[in-house]
Amino acid sequence: MLCCLSRNSQVRDEEDIQSENISNNIKKIKKELFKTRKNNYIGFGISSNVFKVQITKNKHITCKVIKEGWEVSAEREIKLLKTISNLNNEKFPKFICSFKQNLNDVICYDYIQGVDLFSYISETSKISIFYNNENLIIETMLQILYGLESLLTLNLVHLDVKPENIIIQSTNPVKINIIDLNFCRNYKDKIIDNALGTFGYISPEMLFYKKIYYNTDIWSIGVIIFLLYTNAFIFNIEEDKYATNISTSNKVLLILNKYLNKVPKNIGIIVERCLVYNTNNRISVVGLISLIKNIYH
Image (spheres, rainbow, N blue to C red):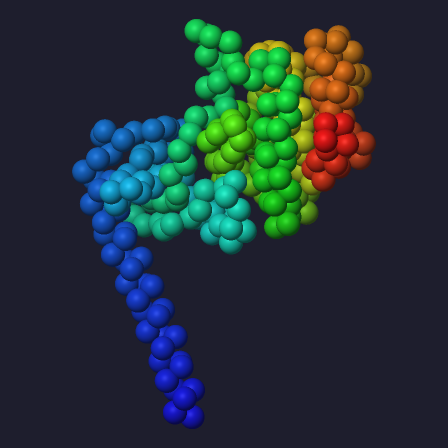
């Protein structure tokens, strides 16, 4: 009995220490965020502003300050980040803590050192290292697919896979991080209230029917592969044109037949398997990983 009491007491002590450490970290983060946010602004969106905050000599974290009116979305994102952090997958940022500051919700997670993939293809001063680089594109896609495969173990799909949400930490060897996880949904829900994603990459089932499937993210992968190789959007990126171009299976096929001759045969095979209008016939994440390995390895 005495032994058990001692063990329970030890567990409580460890929990108290952990809680105290988190509380101390939050105090320090609040202080540093207040001091440095003007100088460490690293991004923004319709729902938040994002800052890089130094908490020790060699460690930085990302602080996402949620804008007024997006509190419900913030609560959902916190739950998602906690769940995904439990995967312990280095391809996703790890949740650190959340708190309120000046009535704003703040979400903190690991700072990811690197450059987003879109920055590579939007450079006008020089040719992207991905342009016509089949091997680099395929290796990068494999790393992204491994991350999406990990999400599927939680029945989650990303729903906003695009170059801006892929951080390239290294190209030799390829090391990536997938960010902006607040659109993630359980694909078993099948239908959601609002379309989620970005024109240029969003799948037909999401754009037109607000439906999600286990292979919905694969559509975006196909678009990105073509974009990286050619520096062009296969279905356009303007909202009206994009919606028109992917509105029917026949229109999608016409565009594929017109443009897939601009990429190597193997790239064409992969893109064609990704950009299938009917999700019943579209390849899965696991299937695409297997296909790529069969072709290139």
